[in-house]
Each structure stands twice: as C-alpha cells, then as structure tokens.
Amino acid sequence: MKTSAIILDGPKSIQMGEIGLIPPKNGEIIVKIRASGISSGTEKLLWTGEMPPFPGMGYPLIPGYESVGEVVEAPSGHGLKTGDTVFVPGANCFDGARGLFGGAAQYLVTAPERVSKIDPGHGVEGALLALAATARHAMAGLQNELPDLIVGHGVLGRLLARMAAAIGPAPTVWETNPARQNGAETYKVIDPQDDTFRKYKSVYDASGDPLIINKILPNLAKGGEIVLAGFYADPVQFGFPPAFMKEARMRVSAEWTPDDLLATRDLIEGGYLSLKDLITHHAQPEDAGKAYATAFNDPACLKMILDWEGQA
Image (cartoon, rainbow, N blue to C red; front, side):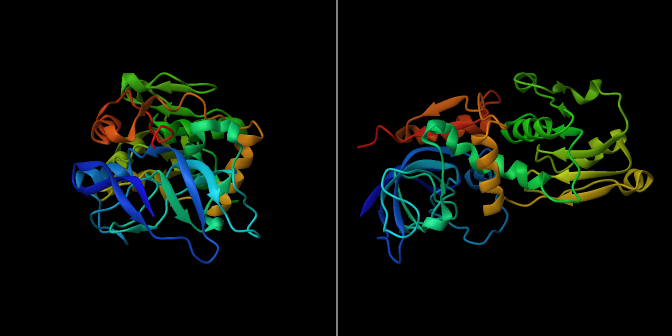
C-alpha cells in the first residue's frame, strides 16, 4: 500500500511524494482524505526548524493534524462504516517517515477511536475542528472564566472570540496587523495602542508572542488571569515588578482532548459555533512548497487548505 503525502525532509524542504502505508491491523480503518489544513503555529516551527525538542520529532516526517475525509474501509463493530465523513487528527501509519502529526496524505490508516464522525455538509471546513476544539479546551472547566480580551485575530483568536460571544458577553480582540482586523462578527477588533481600558479580568493570548505578558499587564485588572493559548517556541518572559503589582495569575492551555473534540462538534452541528470565512486559501498538494510558504508568510492567509480530491 502506498499513498501520496506531504513529506518534510528538513527545514524548508517540503514536497508531495509517494510513501508506503503500514497496512491496517486490529480493527484499524482506512480514510481517503479530502482536505488537510496547514497549521501556522506548530507546523511553521517544523518547517523553519525551530521546533523545540518534542516526542516523535525528526525528519523525514509527514505534517498535518487537521484533516477531513471519507472512510473507505472499516471493520464491523466499531461504529463506523464505509462512506462516513470523519475528522482525522493525524496518523502514524507511514513506512519510512515519522508521523509526528501525519495528516497531510491522500490515504491514512488509523484506529477508529481517533477519528470523529462529522456531518458531510461541513465540507473542507470540517478540517477546522481541531482548532475549534483547542479554543474550547482553553475555556472549558468550572474554574475558568470567559475572556473579556483576546490577543490575536488569526483563526484561533477568531474561534475563541466566536465561542466566547456565543456563551456570554462579547470580548474585545487585539490585532496589530491591519490585514487581520476585519472579519469580526459580534465582537470588536482594535489595535492595542488604541485601547485605554485597564481592567480586563481574563485575557486569552492566541498570538504566540513570547513577550506578550509584558504587553498585556498594563491593561490587566488586579488579580486578573492571562491564559497562554498559543504555542511558544521561545521562553515566555515578563517583568516581575508589573506582574507583582497586578497580582497577575497565569494559566497554560494545552492541546484539546477527545472530549473537547466531541463537545465542539456538537456546538458546530447545533449551530452555536460557525466555521465560516476562516479558510482563505486553497492549494493542490503538488504545490506544497508554495502553499506552506504562503501559509506561514502571508498575513492575509488565515488558513491554507490542501485539496486532495483531485489526486489519482
């Protein structure tokens, strides 16, 4: 068994190629991928070579953890059948390459419990389920407060804002890049330099800026919380005196869990959370080099999708 896949041989060395698939065993399923997303956070660090030491890291590898496709082979008794549309958060099924994420391929072999059945009507937007679940994970929990300020208006920031506005009062969003200040729905997006409010109680960062805490502290309420919801390649640093004066609290939000994925799917399919207008760019897998460069370097690109439908 072989499949077309995006192969990252080393920093900035990426292309579509053919690679062996490890045959399914112990009830595993085969999924034909329709579309896979490119993450401008973790995948960018793999592409630049700046990813900190991480379990499973090494080249060559198959990137991607935002894939949607159709089940083409499934054993009975696992709740899935041929033709089901599923979200796949990557796979480790390749002969000759690491599947650190492993979602950017035409065919994937994976355990049925790793995928989530979704409404086929979502189309390629189903690939956004992982980011939406990441936003949900940051907010979930009895002790967690909804954000009244979100930093960054990329896809994660937009999903955080949409989710917060659907549950409670609409938050404010900071964005310094004019190209990303549009697209707000029930919330406002402003440049932080124009914000004079100094009593934000719950601030969620989706920028990935390791120096962001220093920029938030002047606007934080005393005893307020800063939630680090992005991914930070460099050490997160901040000045202690201003944090001391504000008695600032900090929380790190890790990646989503299977429960987050299911809960987020229900929010989307129940009409409470929209995935519309978040995908701005599409590319064919054979143009992977240009697609990844655009995804990481073009501020107008919120989410790049590789369309696998036309592959033979």
